[in-house]
Amino acid sequence: MPDDFVSSQKFDVDGDGKDELIFSVCTDGGIGRPYTIHIIRDNKIIFSLISLNGKNIIPTKNKNGFYAIWIDEKTDYFDKNGWRGYCCALGHKKTRFVYEKGKFVPVYEQDVVYLDVNTDKK
Image (cartoon, rainbow, N blue to C red):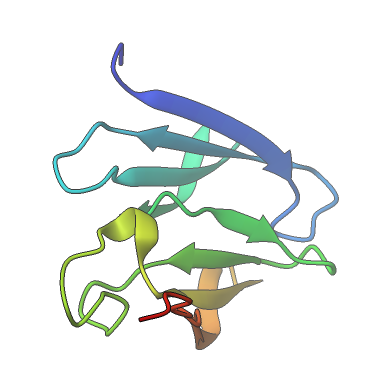
């Protein structure tokens, strides 16, 4: 992985009081930098997410599950007048997962849209 960017963090995602390893690998891409994010417990991958915008998995306050921040390329997060790229999208999705019966289950999802203000005076 000489050209890849690797990062990790630890926090409890299944409510057992023990931290899991959140391991992210960013591969150099042509139109963006795709990230693969894994949650690892006891040396086994228990959840994976591919994110095209380099966002991440965020812990919850109650330590049951996590929030996944990602870009859905089928939505309207890109500039109507041209390509902005994944790095500069106009929003993202935020999905809440909880740990239930041995697996992570999505319980809700929201669109987070940024306001792009043009301050150019003509």
